[in-house]
Length: 165
Image (cartoon, rainbow, N blue to C red; front, side, top):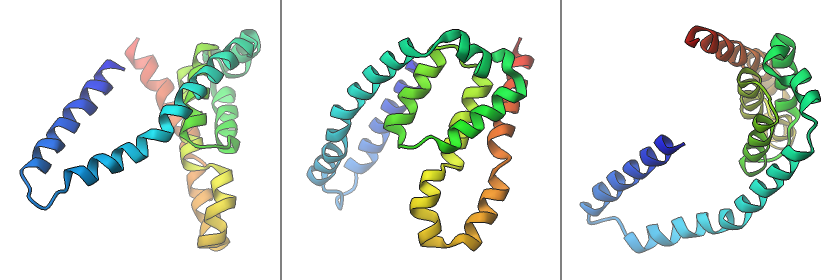
């Protein structure tokens, strides 16, 4: 987590430096735009993290370990892929939920499959945006090709874990 924070901080400083050397960049507009994007997160993120913490306390660990723990194997990866595909909401909901599931004992391959399915399949976004805007002819092909990605990501994560031991 610290590495990600430091990486983003270094990248931000680098971008600020490059932008400060250009005359056409209006720094006041950039700062106000950034603040406008950050303000809603300052309210939503703490609430989502608290909710995820309480959710983690409510999830029966034995049940979670049986369905999505490391020992659940390919069945757990497939179940996590299905759960990720039907999981509604954006990152403010999904990532705190993923944190809660991880603390409840969900295995890393299963969590990778869940987040990959949420990113790639997300049926709520398919129904709300893709089908109305792009059309079913394209969407069914994209979904057919993408269905293997979440389980494959979970299997690759399991393989990387086994190689690393």
